[in-house]
Length: 500
Image (cartoon, rainbow, N blue to C red):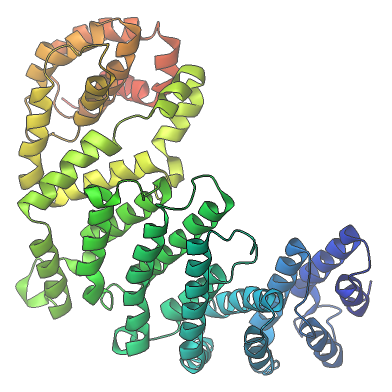
């Protein structure tokens, strides 16, 4: 099938949707095979010129899935031809984005995002310079567009309007995010870039305030939460790619994230994915090597020293104590949903809890990583706090008090250098393992985890016979074996191959 025929088919809105869908997929998949000049049976320059013109004749596609595929298709061609063989693409997209028709504007923005995304991914020096030139030339327009669309969305939220299904604010921030992160060599020296990044904090506050009045579970709330996450990704991406230019934003980022996640300011407005994003922001700042002084004084850079100074001033004893306590007493606690999952499907619970590659996206794994990073960087402050929490929970837990059970599960964490583990095992943990009440398996599970961490580090050989008995009894609990299979394997590995 000729490419001209495929183009005619998916541009014809009178034809069957499935036929048009197949046509756009065939066209998109054929670009890699036939568009390059050196490809076998490559398209001629005349054919390609005609096809490029046909791809941007209108942005009125009514089917969302087809519109997305057309946008991706145009981006694939742009990756090969823009701007040298296709100089008119960007000007046409800019004109279409400026039209009053919201549907056409949405389709043009969708295409513009995919085009900027693919152009930003090119790595040759000449391609990067071309993208930087593009970013400089359209950045002011992109910022004004983003402000306009964000104001419009906020007005719709305040009015409770859920009729507009084609939101423009998410696409304008996606588009602007690519320009901001990849379009400037020294973004901190560009007033518009830094102005946009600072404005992101203000916009986030406005959106979070709207969470009070937008009904949870509604379409409007779903759009609101998705937009908030997109805004947080701007900060995370900029920090990842430009740690030193991000230094002027460290203080504000920490104040923002800590305020919403670890104080009363976030009560009633934050949601799980936003909490995860804030935790990731804190984690990336805390563990960033660019923000740590060098071991040799002569190797220190002014930027690193400045960032370290900001972090040190922010993470006071009071702030760290509050973060540590809330991580353990709030975010480490298993929810009712997690406990139910454990009861009904232990294997799925184990996969969900360990997080796998999803530690950046799931709350409990993300909490665990943030806690470890903060503890390792500020252990002198946090170790006494954690020890106090553990000591306050000594002795058997009241099985009728779920909060006390969950607190003990959360608190037993990362105290290798501060605890005599052999004494702790004999005087406390052994008894916890031998307590057979069904609800107590929550504690047994955490004790298994603890011993799995310590078994090859600090554990006397003479205590091992006690462990053998415990292991045999624990193996009788199928739920516990399934949910803790990995930790049980560490048990056995430590016993068979001790490091003493």
